[in-house]
Amino acid sequence: MKALILDFDGVIADSAKESFLVAVQAYLHECPKSLLVHRKSRELYQPFRDLMPLGNRAEDFGTALAALEKELTFEDQEAYDRFRAKQDPLWLAQFHSRFYRVRATMAERDPDRWRALMRPFPPLLEFLRRRAGQTAYAIATAKDRPSVEALLEDYGATDLFPGHLILDKETGETKAAHLERLRELLGVEYAEMTFVDDKVNHLDAVASLGVRCALATWGFNGMREHELAIRRGYLMLTLENLDEKLFDKVPATH
View 1 (cartoon, rainbow, N blue to C red):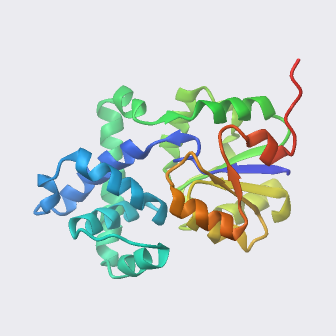
View 2: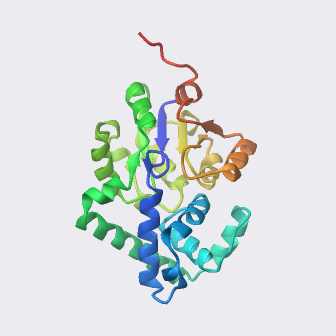
View 3: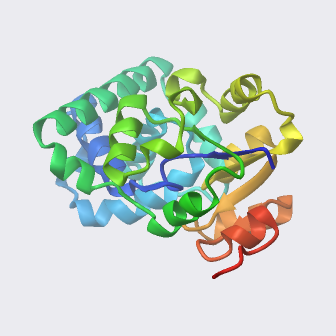
C-alpha cells in the first residue's frame, strides 16, 4: 500500500449531527411550507441518519428530508436512487448551494459550537499518527475544503495530510474523480491505493478502478451496508483492527 485515502465525514469526523442541523435549516429555507417544521429534531435525526449511507453529496441531504416528509422508506440503494431521480435538478442545485451557505453562516456566527458538533474519532487519529511515514495519506471528500482544513487544525492533525492531497467537493461528483486525480498526484497505481469510506455506494464507485476498498464500520452505516460490503468483498474495518487489516500486522510494542 503506497497510499491510504480517507473519506472525511463518517471516517475522520463524526459529523452526522452537524449535517443534520445544517440540512434541516437549508430545507426549511427552500421549502418554507414544509410540514417538517412541526416535527421535533429528535424524531427526525435517526431516520435521517439511516438514509445518509444512500447519498453522495449535500443535495442528497435534501433528498433524504423530502423522503422523510413523505414518510417514505427505502429497502436498498436502487429504491433510493429511483426516488432521487424524480427530484427536480434545479431544486437539488439550489439546495446544494443553500446547504453550504447555511454551514458557512453557522461556522462564522459560532465557530466553537460548530466545531463541537464534529468531533474526530480518536482511535483513527492515533492509528494515523502511529503509522505516519509508512504510506502517503490523502483525503477524498464531498465536504468543502475550508471546513476540512478548519477541523483538521482543531484535531491537531494538519501535519498528517499535505494540502495538495486534500481533495474536496470541487474535484468531482463521485469518488472515482477524486481517486483518478490522486493517482496523478501521487504517481502510484490503483492497486497500490486503499480507499476507506463509510458508504458502500462510494466504494462501489471506485472498485472497478482496482483500488482496495474498505468500509469504515464506525461511520454512518448499519447492517444493511455491512452485509453489502461483505458480499462485495470489501475490507471490514473497525477502530480496533486497523493495523491488522490495512498493514497485515500489528506494530511491536516496546
